[in-house]
Length: 125
Image (tube, rainbow, N blue to C red; front, side):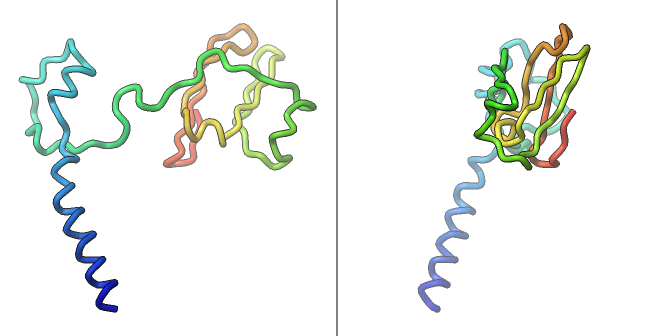
């Protein structure tokens, strides 16, 4: 029991020491958004915390490739997908792929589309 308590305290200490590193880094922002003037702001920069991956940290899928339903043997019959049909062209975007990419830029039925999925709220647009 004492060992578990000691381990828990060590974890809390490491979390407390590491938390300041989560503060946003204006130097990094300047690299990601070089045309932005960071001297103008209404919130103190040290109050801004990182919210996840950096700009372009989640790669979109551009020009995706598809297989026919008969060839899609890697998908279960109950695999959740985002379905889209335009002008007689049908597509299925598997959620197990969108969980890691979140955005697909595609052309469906001759129409350029962007399919998005948010794994945090389980929503597609």
